[in-house]
Length: 201
Image 1 (cartoon, one colour):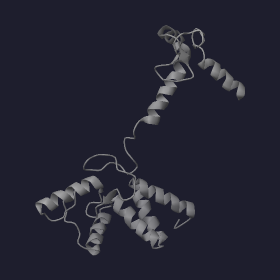
Image 2 (tube, rainbow, N blue to C red):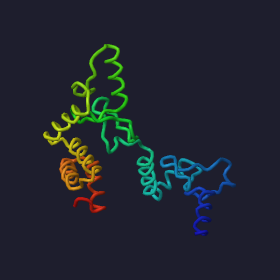
Image 3 (tube, rainbow, N blue to C red):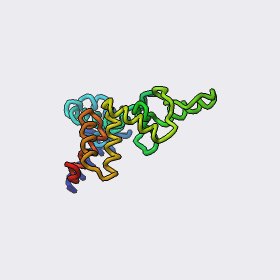
Image 4 (tube, helix red, strand yellow):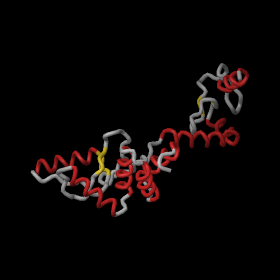
């Protein structure tokens, strides 16, 4: 291990192409300007080009690694907000599921819609489908039942988790399995946890 460290240090101190050392060269040796890999340094652009065939494979690997490491994710497992189309935040309480349409709306769009309705003195409606906001839990439950009858995977997952917390694992498994088959990622996760714990399976 120590010998490898010494070899790497020696490579840093000299040009990877012509072998000129840092002491012999009046300027600083610069790393490869394609991948910026500090373990490979050169004294000139010519040396960089001459050494390119030897370093190319490592260079491409390094560039790809940097792209994967530093690029922003295109989305999250929660998907995008259907209104602003921005990736949904993974933080708790940063979005809300609407009982009328089972759409998950980000807090920004929900708040903007609320301010607009307040300024215009309009009745509260869903930011997505414009359905009137339920005034009671019973009304919200009726909306959920309609979504369940329509085989909405989000509504199926919600009722499945409610049954799970009630301890009714068999019904919870049934709803979550159906939601998972329809592609709901969170339902697939919870279903996997039920398999792991042997609950309702």
